[in-house]
Each structure stands twice: as structure tokens, then as C-alpha cells.
Length: 251
Length: 331
Image 1 (tube, rainbow over the protein chains, first blue to last red):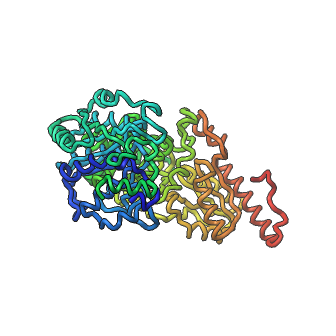
Image 2: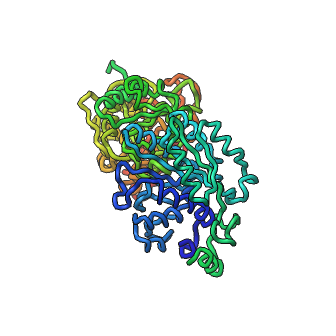
Image 3: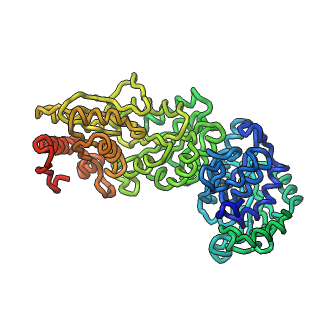
């Protein structure tokens, strides 16, 4: 997709892929043939630049044809560079400007509670993204309102555009921060599906407070030449790299 | 004319009535519920009122989430913080996503008074008007506030409404019904048109009285639906009176004066004078002192009417050469 598009965010898509797989193919309750089903669980991709991974999963689930994936970022495509609910079936809300998704997820969780729906809300954030102040406004309000139908997931891949998060703007101790804000906080290997599933199960059982899963991941996961390389935050592979990536990812 | 009502108070009361009528309405505030008047709703509908604390970005994001969840959220705080602090949240989510969020912000303009320039939103209308999908409303009195609030609750899509702190005289009666994209002619006249929004509508009416005493008949138009603007009425007024004054408690950049000028430049070039703040911030003072200082009184509107009428006369005298262009001092 990204190779065809010639632009897009490779590293942060691959770091989040296993998380999204565990979420969409096990945890979440939604119907591709009825995207507006009122009782569905909701997902907000707060790190909107992870759109390629999100789109690939939505296509696999049948929200739209997989052929569309090859139109990513092109003029007239239903797949915008960052998620746009006005264009793409299954996408709840436009994202891409970082730091805003958690507040939206809170509002969804609060309205689900008012409606008496059992639906739950999942929101995936990037680790650089939590440098945005609004995240912590929302962290405070989710705990204040005791949103136990809300699960945040932090894609802790340790890299942002300008380099390591520790160098650009340290976010540690990140688990302690969420705990201090009153969140049920867990840390897992974000590439281990069983661990992710166990974490989701634990979040279901929590009452009276929101949950945060800090998923330790590797940027560019799955392709040796991309892994842990900040260069691939926002660049796409050249033809040789593309061939190698296909080989490593199994075609 | 004796009765006075503040638009923020009428918003608060109407919201509480709407809460009774429509269980889907939820209200969010950012620690200013006493000032924005959402406390009336909060008292009765405790489970549908959400104080988000002093966190306007989160306020707007959460309101967006409520809209996604099928609720009708009204989000209120001061106009400065709603449109300034949280502009990008409004842009990226509420406007871009065309969500059913009603942003009703109080304390618009310099009549906030003593709090000073930091709290006087004089650019909020520009900030909201520039956003695709956003409806922008500025009620002129209590009845118009009630009509607009009721309309907004029934409309599917994002709305920004500015209310004011100061009590203002009644212009309409309770039979007034708001219609999207429609301005109203409050007084007929053929010499000049005075177009106002918010508290400046009353000032336009008073200016028309002053002009009438001089034998000048002014049409007075309320364009409280700033977006979508009633461009047919704007063009018709320009054609039938040949001279236009706009009046707003806002910068002349980006608000009513800009909107009218943009339409007339494209469709019907006409002498226009914009009454409003001229590239300056507000400051502390009594509302009346500030209105006088910034040139926002009926007297100022009357003066502006004289200027545009002089330019109209010049154009008629020298339509081709434009020889008698108004002096720069008159801008």
C-alpha cells in the first residue's frame, strides 16, 4: 500500500498491527455489514498516521474491498492519508492531529453509559502523542467519570519523527503517570497476541475506572531493515527494500 | 423597550426547557456554568450535565464523542476559550467530522467589561466562520436567543452561537422564529443600509433614529445568522440603498464586515463602511465606556452612514473616472 502510495507512515503502522489484530479479530464487537450498528464497540485511532494498518484490517473485515487498499492517499480515494470518517466505511471520526482521540473516546464512553448500551470504547494512542497536553486533560476526565467501558492502548514503540522519545521529550515513567491519574494500567508485549488478549480480558473485569494497556512494540515490526529505524516513521521503501519486506512478511 | 435581557441568560433558560423536552440533550461546561448559564440545566438534569473542568480542548473532544454516540451535546464556555483555546479541536473533529455539536459561547465582545482584553473575544466569529460545515449565529436579544437555541437543538450539524454578558433591550417578541440563512429587515429605508449582528443591531436601530432626525431613511437589517449569510438580502440592500454600513462587536477582519464586503465585491460593488474593532485588543472598563472608546455606538454608525452616503454621491457624480475618491483619512 505504502509502496504504491509513495508516502505514508510505515513504522508506526507495523508497530500497531498486532495490537489491531488482537483488538479487531477477538476483542471488539462490530459488524462490517452494519457499520452503524448502535451497540457496536467503538475504536478511535488517535494516532491517525497508523491509518494503513487500520485500513488493511477494515478491508480484511469486509468494510470495503481490498482493492481499495491500492488507492491509499491517491486523489479520489476512499482511503485518505489520515482517517476520515466522511470517506471510509468503518472509520468513526477523522483523526491525524495528535492528542485528540482520547477526549472523543471519553465522550463516546459517556454517551454509551447514558444510553445504557453495553458497548465499549477502544482508543489507540502513540507514545510520542502523549506529549500533547490534551491527552492528560482527557486522562483526568476519564478517571473522574469512572469510565470503565474505556480501554486506552499506548503503542510504545519508543520512536517519533525526530528520534527516540527519550531524547525528543521523555515520557517516562509512563505507566506510573497513568496509574497516578487513576487508571488501571498494564504493560504487555505488543507483538504477543496472547498477552494482548489477556490484557483485554483483565480490562473487562475492572469496575469504576478506565484502563490503559501500555503495549511495548517495535517500530517497523516484521521487517528487519525497518525495525527500530526512525527513518521509516514517515518514509516509504525503495524497490529493493520493498522486495525484501515482501519476502520477510511472507508475500 | 423597557425590558432588558442578556442573551446568555436566555440561552441558559431555554436550554433547561429543552432538557425537559428532549432527553438526548447533554450539556458540557468548563468550570464556567454560572457565567455561561448552563447551571440552570445542571441543576435539573444532573446526569446529563458534565463539568469538564478548566480544559477546553477536552471539552470539545468530549462533546464530539457525545455527538458520535448519538447525543445532542451543547458545549459552553467563554467565547475566547471555546474558539481560541480549542480551535483546532473544533476544526479537526467537530467541523471536519460535521458532528452534531452545539458550541454556545458566552462573553463575546468587549462588553465583557472589567475582565479586560484577555477575556474579550473579538475574533471568535472569524475563527468559526472560516470553518466548513459550521453554522455561525449571533443573537441580538432574548427572543432571538431563544429561537436560535431551539433551532440549533433540532438542526443536525455543528453550530457556533455567541452570547453576551450584558443585558440588552428587546427587539423581537416571542413570536420570532429563526430561519437558517435568512436575515431580517427591521426597518425600511432607501438612503443607506445598516447591517448589524448581536448587540450592534440595537445600535443600528438607534442610529436609524438619529439619521431619521436628519431626514435620512436607513434600512436596518439583522444578519444574526452570520453563516450561511443571507447574501440575497445583502445584495438587495446594496442595490436598493447604494450604501452599506456593517456593525459588529468584533474585529472588522473576518466577521460581518468581511462577509458582507466579500459578497458585495463579487456581486454588487457598493460603498461599505465597517464599524467594529480595528486591529486592536480590548481592555478593562465599563461596557458603555468601551463601546464608546472602540467606536461601537449609534453615533459611530450614524457617522459611518454619512461617509458611505458621501461615497455613493461621489460615485454617482463621477461614475467612470472615480475622480473624487474618498480620502485615506476617511477609511
